[in-house]
Image 1 (cartoon, rainbow over the protein chains, first blue to last red):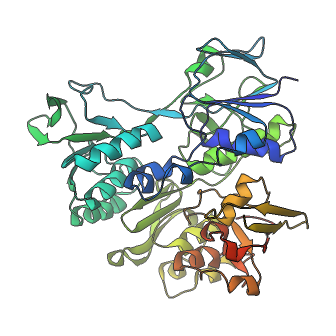
Image 2 (image 1 turned 60 degrees about the horizontal axis):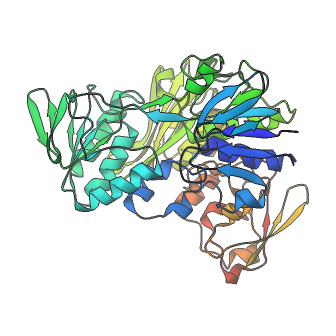
Image 3 (image 1 turned 90 degrees about the vertical axis):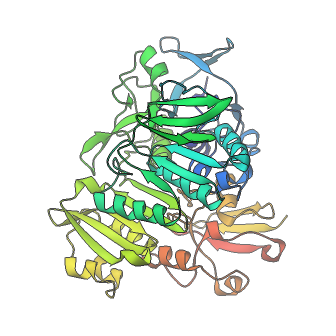
Length: 401
Length: 106
């Protein structure tokens, strides 16, 4: 028996390996990861890991000794070159070949890279890996002026950490509002105001045209405007790593195409996490979902199914983002709603906006409101009493009956 | 090293030696104890690390934070014994603590 090979050593890979052992699989498990670390969680990288509040030991998905303890062969700093589906082997760039009975592709995503004049200057960083963030943290210790390109969650989380550390921070957002891709104009306004109050210089409708240097990066050019910066962090989205799958002839389209059992177009190959395009029965559509819960749930389903199980994956998407002392927790997609119901007072930084479609709950954006976040997971798809939902004096538990 | 005694919903017991400073959630996930999902990795953002700890052991723990309390409040299986295991850090004073796992994580 050749066992199970996992390409990628991220959240999905770490969870899949654990789930395989938990599911009773005793055969060989091999994880092949490009980075130098054992599987780790990315969310803290733009939050407490960047700020230095926690170290690497707290971001690992499982302690390093977990892998040898459970006979999981973890190969770090290993790049896979190709998948040979006919012979069921995986070959690395160093020429090693790993045979598989079942293969899990968890190659994740990589940051979208700016390709404009000066974009390869020293001092311009992307934020995806521990290595990236270790370099950023070191640079932030002596930087005075940080310019962040991209007003999405990564950019805003980094802005919060940096301005708290005393740097002068500018965030450049190409669209007409921050968080445009992921939330409503009202929530964008709320966060715009929050960051401005805390001292961040937010510039929307501002695209970057280039960078100039004085040794390392010194200025960010945005058409006629130029901004001094001795450190630049770019957070403009991620692209799924589908190249290996495509080269192997697996069906791909905005991610590796899988079914609701995480199986690809090859019955012996599964995929999980950021790299997949998968159907979601609850949302009634296909999507590529960049979230930790997705990586973990798909990994669990893939592990079960690789062992002959029949586990369909269909979970309500949820996300979180920590900026300053505000915890934003989200269920579903606000864009799916046709009606908004506000609960609480935005001015207190503790409120929730529920989104309804045809009077049924489809999403929530909850700021420092964990109960509203939790209740939304249970209310999803249900009709609710809107006036009770909007009234913070009404106990949320009454809505569950 | 202090020990945690996990008891699954179906009665299966796991005696786990834990590193000082590890949370009970981490002790479970590092040792493949089933029944704890830990989706958010310990950031008090998901409540899928829900466990049940008896009143006498609870007296030795720090009380629930507002966030932990709010996250537990809407869990259908919530009782007075409910805690989020990502918020409980192990130490020698908790040696032998008995942690019961609920049937489901929500």
